[in-house]
Image (tube, rainbow, N blue to C red; front, top):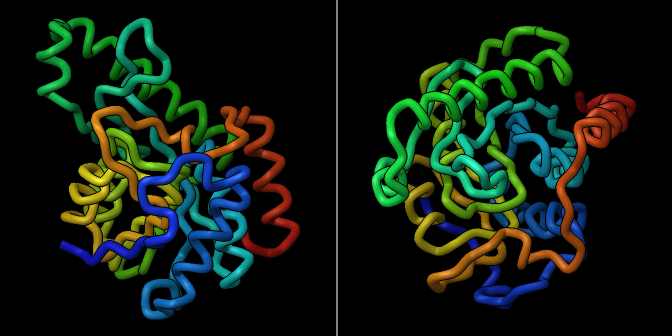
Length: 232
């Protein structure tokens, strides 16, 4: 299990970041205390929200951006509720306990998996022009997203990176549920999470005073800005 680094002054609090850009700067501030975690790293951004968080980190430490395309396997009828996730290499992680609790059959689950895979393929084409992932063997990578709720997306991304021979892997998120942060730390070499919260109810959005989903057009615009800075 990797160590978990957080900001005690933000523990348990809601509304601590104005937006994802400020959240990224908070992560960079915490990272700066641990140069061994980011020196020589790629700044891996999980779209959509992770790209906005990764931008300030990449600029702070002059790290190249690596897109880590993954999608939640959504619960039928609920676009915000994930029961798993799919990575760019096709691997899937499912929350079997949640699926059983929801009483979902295999056909319904498989349909959602295929939907997530189709979305991943579309994003790979849109954001990367269908280019394959680079050789990641032995590369230190920051795995950046805008928060950790259930954790499936981070877990499937980390599994895909490990399979590609990457490492060390440092998970970097502005906010996360304490139980999920601990689970992700089990498969990470370290976790940076300024705002760790507990409780039975958790929503990533509650860490932000201004929250909205980013469109794919906005992600493309952010990537263009990073490319102009020589970071993508």
